[in-house]
Image 1 (cartoon, helix red, strand yellow):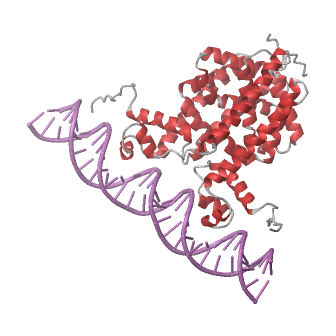
Image 2: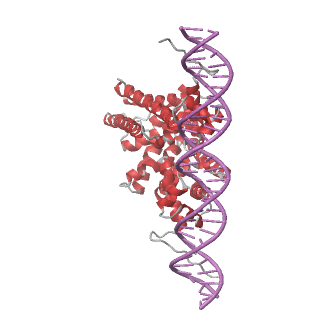
Image 3: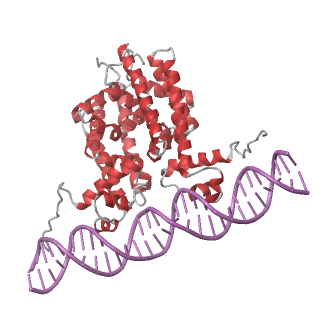
Length: 203
Length: 203
DNA sequence: CATGTAGACTAACGGTTGTTAGTTAGTTAT
DNA sequence: ATAACTAACTAACAACCGTTAGTCTACATG
């Protein structure tokens, strides 16, 4: 048994990673079902059959893209939930979580949002992660309403309103790369959070 | 040349309308590309070939769903733009427009959001309608900032934040049918608009 | 030098796709 | 009564789908 060194290509990723990243890009443009293995192969300049030296199946690619992202969100939420800061700061942390993940994997976010229903074996697992995430999110809102940090409106509506905006970040973040992460997160935080902040002192 | 009476089925729609509505429902669940003509045929209890007595092509179905909805939004925006009310009331009217259209065509909204890229001949037309809609929307926000009815934040971010929430209505509106239109529109208006309202006097 | 492996290839498979052709039973119009 | 139309059917086509089998070459390891 000897050490094995993974060969890296010119962009510093393994071939498998390159295939998955390219797939995510195509999935964003046309959706999982409309992208064929021959499309994907052409995009990485090999033949369709050669893809199978690196991946198990088309399904497997989708699973890799979605599950890893979903787990990133779950882990991020766990950290935020257990952190000892104000509710408003927790909400700001959630905004940053979405901005950061979306910046480093814009293409994958499209699959997470639009192609999760094509997961087969992992569908149930994905749905449980999403359900838990939304429940944690709404709990934070509720406790903010109790402590009067958040305006007293329907917590589910507040949660969905913020979450759908964050989930759509992948659509308009690419057009806004002149603003860097911190600026965008701040602007977005202002719009999303000051709106529901009870003592609205922005100016 | 004589009058022609369109035969209506048990649900009071023509067969073509029934097919398109059923298609929209399937498109919402799996996306345009993943739904086959045989799937659609089975859902309306005929054979795939028989669909072509009523529609020209699969493309044609998608076109019918998306373009009519996009034009509804365009017409609605035109009315709101030219109405003589406050900026805040215009925003409330936009919220109502989305709520009402989404209520009466929940399935179609999924295609509008997720399958527009599979339009072929009509893609350019659709994109122009969407572009105009967003431009009108952001103009309303800008004039609201000028008149100080709206908090002074980045108008594009405000617009996208509201619009993405409204675009996602089709996802969570079906779960909330205990609230009727007016209630939902009001709640949503509170969350979306009071947040950016300059003199935030909600309580 | 011999051997093993990674990663590309060609060829082909069985199944599915959207769609067309041709037919037929039932209804409506003249 | 006859002609025309509507809306269903069966059968089939050519193209495309994901995937497998088997092969070849370049390179790393012993």
